[in-house]
Amino acid sequence: MKWKAAIVTYRKEKRIAVYFERNAELIERIKKLEGARWSYKLMAWHLPDTDAYRERFKLEPRFILNPQHAIKIENFILWMRSRRMSEQSVDVYADALRTFLSFYNTKAVEDLDNDDLIRFNNEFILEKKLSASYQNQIVSGVKKFFSTVEHRKIDVELIHRPKREKVLPNVLSKEEVKMVLDALSNIKHRMMLALIYSCGLRRSELLNLKPTDIDSHRKLVIIRQAKGKKDRIVPLSEKILVLLRQYYKLYKPTVWLFEGQQKGQKYDERSIASVLKNAVAKTNIKKSVTLHWLRHSYATHLLEAHTDLRYIQELLGHSSSKTTEIYTHVSTKDIKNIRSPFDDIF
Image 1 (cartoon, rainbow, N blue to C red):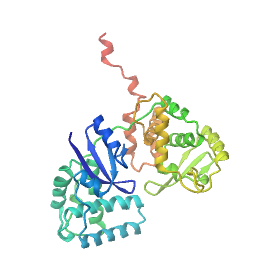
Image 2: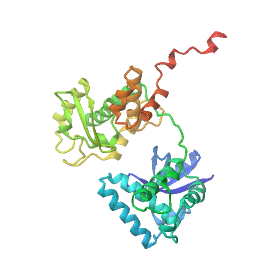
Image 3: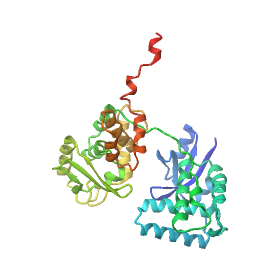
Image 4: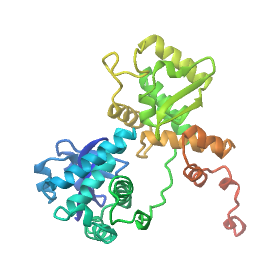
């Protein structure tokens, strides 16, 4: 059975992603490895980045960067932070540049050109059969670096991006969403998943909410400094508001709306994923549901209820309408009305 492994940055942490064709035996084997976790975002199993695992999966030893390259990367990080980019973006771009420059460890940055990037894509990305999204991540980091910090031989206007796979978002029916929520007896757990679905929140947006972000008088949720450092507001359902009041009286959160076992401590993002997993396991839903499915479902159900696409774009916090338009491909409100020619034959 063939497999491929690669170093990736996942939730601000270096991990080893292992890609292989679906195989029950291999899945059971990798599950037993210490620190192994599955990611729907990566569509791969991933492990801690250790020397032992690098050797096991035949990856190069942890590279030692050329000192001049290391200085360039550090300057790039300082530039990004001076622009107040999110730490997640800083990590992603810096890691992308680090990977690219480590491939040319003996070549000066000043001598790199577009042909070097093409060679990197062919001899590293394609050779290792890494995903188009990972390639795009590298290209973004390299382009950002050479267009802002290092004005050298690489012409950023000639840098091409790989074609992305067009994958439809996964969606639950309203009945399935209700089944998931009904499977939860813990009011905090139910409240978190209900708020993600009812407001179309990203996981980070939910966990960054503070009690003061709930405007009960205007029936709004204020989402502060979300993706792209943008604030936005979303309407708050009257039924959700009732549940929130019950939750608040019981848990009395202090700093964050949803706190961990210790007061003032933000709820763990991995724990909420486990909450959903356990809830789905109690239903007869056989799909591999993730938290983002609830956000996709919110958008799709709004569209099926004839909500204008422009409003959905605002509610989700999308910068481009093209991102929101993907939900038109999974909405069934018009497709159901199409009569199949098969019905005219029999």
